[in-house]
Amino acid sequence: MAHICLSIAVGLVHLHSEIFGTEGEGKPAMAHRDIKSKNILVRVNGTCVIADFGLAVTHTQSTGTLDVASNPRVGTRRYMAPEVLDESINMQCFEQFRRADIYALGLVLWEVARRTLSNGIAEEYKPPYYDVVPSDPSFEDMRKVVCVDQHRPSTPNRWSSDPTLSGMAKLMKECWHHNPSVRLPVLRVQKTLLKLAQADPAIRLDSDTDVCV
View 1 (spheres, helix red, strand yellow):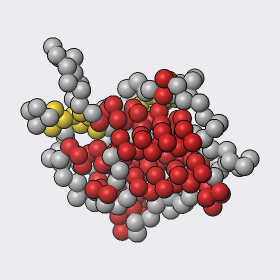
View 2 (cartoon, rainbow, N blue to C red; view 1 turned 90 degrees about the vertical axis):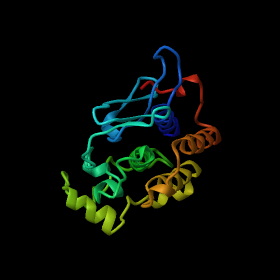
View 3 (cartoon, rainbow, N blue to C red; view 1 turned 60 degrees about the vertical axis):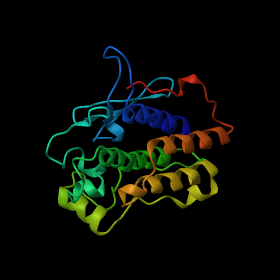
């Protein structure tokens, strides 16, 4: 589990970072805007690839250019951050889009953790908010649950007895915080996941923890 989650975080670090190069070899910083489990592909070796950049927004620090459509409500409703659902997101601030990605990442971490075997137990797969919204929720369904009720996915009691899962539970809660400015930056998420992976004797880390984007 930690290996997969770390791999996803490494990919998001790459995506969110601007890479400076010569002769057009650099890369602008990007926010995905539709992070969800269906947009993360898993290789045979367990490393991950972030896919589908149709809604991505790019930002170039040197010019201050922000390439984004005017509609704030894009992406998959189930994974939309509170500020996207209530349209309070500042469309001129690139950091706001990165923070919305972090919210969605927290939900993906929850999905992975639920399927992780611990003491012979793993929950069946369910999407985030499966117990409080319909299978195809509307904006209003999600806005009420996420913004008004400030509900978040519950974590099973069994996680508290597993050091890795309890660490994951703390991490995901810091990712999906209602206040975008309180959410962890993706580098901090990566470092926390690396520590969890290093502390788990069942996990062997190698150079394949990279993610190709």
